[in-house]
Amino acid sequence: MDEGLERRTVGKVFRRLMPFLGLLYIVSFLDRVNVGFAALAMNQELGFSSTIYGFGAGIFFLGYFTMEVPGNLIMAKVGARIWMARILITWGIISGFTAWVSSPMQFYVVRFLLGVAEASFFPGIIYYLSSWCRSKDLARAVALFMMSLPLCNIVASPLSTYLLGIDWLGLSGWKWLFILEAVPAVVLGVLCPFYLTNRPEDAKWLDEKERNWLVGVLAAERAAKQERKKYSLVQAFADRDVIMLSAIYCAWICGFYGITLFLPILVKALSSAMSNQMVGFLVMVPYIFGFFAMYLIGRHSDKTGERRYHTVLGMLLGAFGLAGSVFLADISVTVSMTFFTLAVMGIYGSFGPFWSIPASFLTSTAAAGAIAMINSIGNLGGFAGPYAMGLIHDATGSFRGGILFLVVCLMGAAGLLMMLRKAGAEVRSGAKDAGYNLTQ
Image (tube, rainbow, N blue to C red; front, top):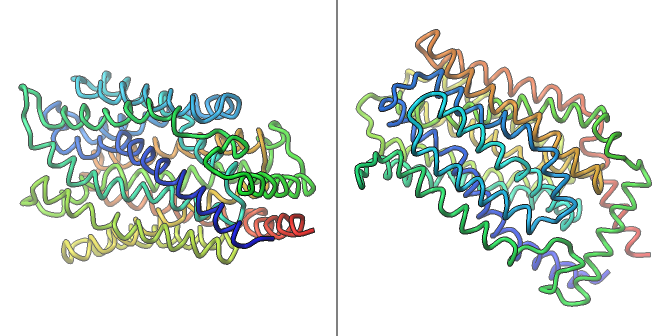
């Protein structure tokens, strides 16, 4: 095998796809979580309690759940170019409408419809990456793509809290936050059909040797997976490990969104004298460290071929960080922010190795459907986490009980992952099998 050809082709794929896909995810996540920053002013102006806010922030994921699997199967048929454009344009328009909500019911409806519009975006990207990347490169690709999550928060924290302070045309700053942050989704949606390439076979930006090598190595990997076990779509949905991965992701995402959608409020609660703008700059800190944690963990997972323990250790670090923020929060703001940072590093760092697991034993339509199933069921945790945080706060007057609930979720996810059968060995053997086939 020509190592120069391999490096050149993989490098071209990464340089072509990762920056654009990362930008799409930044915009996606911004329109999903900017409600956490808007809540600093919106809740007071509209009279929303923590329970109303938590339910509205989380109901997004119920809408997401309804269209996740059908949307990903549609994308597998029509291709990423058209389907991603549809997703981006519709979610951008709906996100902008959030600026005009004035009652809890309107808030719930807009957030639900935003989830419906954005459904299948994330699993669609994971499936898309698995059709362009070898197993040995996938954790790094997913980690690079998902590094957009902390990067989004690094950018969004000061930007969103700055927008809260403006008052143009008689509209409050939180309204402008939703309007202005919705525009990039529509613009990028228009660009998608012109930039994305559906399959390696269609990649005119690769020369003939590069294209043939990539198509060949991916075909060899698919054949190696199918030799071990060929999954139909129905078999993939019924597979024990696919079901377990769905449960693991649900518990993990409960912790992920519980902290992500409430972190600005939690930081604000550390000091009554803290301005919204100071909150924005402090919230940046955990995500800066989370950004580097995602890259380093994903890179090391690919280097070793190990997925299970990389994911588990990240989840446990997240649980440790959140627990520390509860029991040692009274010492100082610095101590609290340190534990929030550890929590974000662990929770975010697990994404790359986790999403390499289902792609290691599933192919074709089975992979598209199963990845969507894992993500859709898992994202129900995105409803449970924020809602539990708000509900427990209103019942007890403190966020401590809600944070401990997130700790239990993360530890439960780590425990279930230790029981998974397909979480490492098949990744390594699949890569070796594919490599062997190509060198014959």
